Structure formats: structure tokens, C-alpha cells
Length: 295
Image (cartoon, helix red, strand yellow):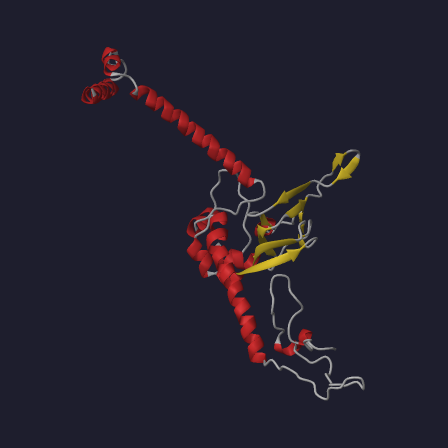
């Protein structure tokens, strides 16, 4: 090789892992694969070869710097993004931040495969950057006479591989559809044991039924993790509840907008049992006193 060039780098460092520079090989794998011999040609007038030797301790220091930056970014994402997204206690997630890994995947990488049976070492992926295509092979949709697999594009904040929490076969395949996807990953076994305090997979429960899963969720400050499509349903329920509160508030304001004369003209409510009638009369008197004080 002609200068300048680095010799036998692949014998010390792992080939560029996407998103993880300067990853050192384990001790057992660091073996010199070739010999390096200085050689001078007759046409070269120089008689010496200058080499800059980099000690292993310096390479280790550089690798430690990159790992520190990586772990700091991971911890910030666990506390500020993963915990709020999964509705969990940030302190609990940060306590077990070692079970998470910050990974980067290239285009066409398969995160989960439809129909495969997950195990405790299978991983959950929370998408941080990029886009993942979820391919559902259950049926095909015809478009312009051509059968196509139903798919859904998911981006930041989506949990991929959540079927594994219940020990169910994956109902879709997750494939990276952009140049790169950055995700926060965690093994199923560690997620259940450390964050949900369970040794077994979750169990499906009938709607409205309360099981031990609810108790585990209350301890960790979270319910079952959101599945694909649950976010839209949750948003619809929140809007419906907010609209109902708005209508109730408008009705209350309509009552209190009545002037003192309007309240005075209203006859005290009557009828009903004596106890109920007395309560109604007290409420009527309090309304009149309030409007006298205002006027």
C-alpha cells in the first residue's frame, strides 16, 4: 500500500456498524490476518519508511468516547421519549436503561417476520427516525387488477413487534422503507421482567375485565403498550369526552347567565318527597342571594 494508509484496521475494529463507529472486536477475535513488510522499489529514491504506531490504549479511549456519547443519547431517549410514549414511569425506565439499545438499520432490513413465533430474546422496536412498512399477508387488495399486500407506513413513536409481548405470532412483517431507520430496541424478556415485573408473557383479557395485568400496569405507571392503530382510537375517545364536557359546561353557563329578575320570576320548584323539596328550595334561595350580591 502507498502512504498514507492504515494497516490491518479490520483486525482490530468491527467493520463500520451502521450508527456505531469505532467498535472494537473481542479479545479472542483480534488476530493479525496478514504480515506487513516494508518494501522499496528501485525507482524510489528514499531508503526509509515512516510509520505512526497507534497503541491499543489510544484506540480504546476513542472507542470509549463514542460509547459514552451513544449511552448518553440512549438514556435521554429512554427518559424523555420512550417513557412518555409507553405511559411508564421515567424513573423506572431510566433505572433499567441498560436493557435498551440504540440501533440504526438500512433500507430493506426486516425487523420482524410475519408468522414467526417470538421468544424471550425477540426484540421490541420503538421507531425514532425514518419509516417502516408493516406488511399484512392475511389478505390481498386488488388495485388496477393487480393483487397487492395490505400495508401501513409507520414513523416516529410507533412500537413494532408488540405481538411478542403476548407470545403471539407476528401478524405482519416490518421492513425498513427509507435509507435509514433509527430505533430504540429492547428484548422481550427484559421488558417483561424489568419494567412490568413479570416472568411470563402477557395474557389477553376480555373487554372490561380486570386481571393481574392491570395491577402490574399500575405499579409501573402504564397500561398495556399501545398497539398499531390504538393511537387514533384513543385520540377519538379523548375528543368525544372533551366535546361532552364542553356541552355540559355550556349548559351550566346558560343557567348562570339568567339575570336577577329572571331568577326572581321563577317559582321555587315543588313536588316530590319533602326532603327533595327542601333541598330544591335551599338551592333556589342560594341562587337569589348570589344574584342580589352580584347586582
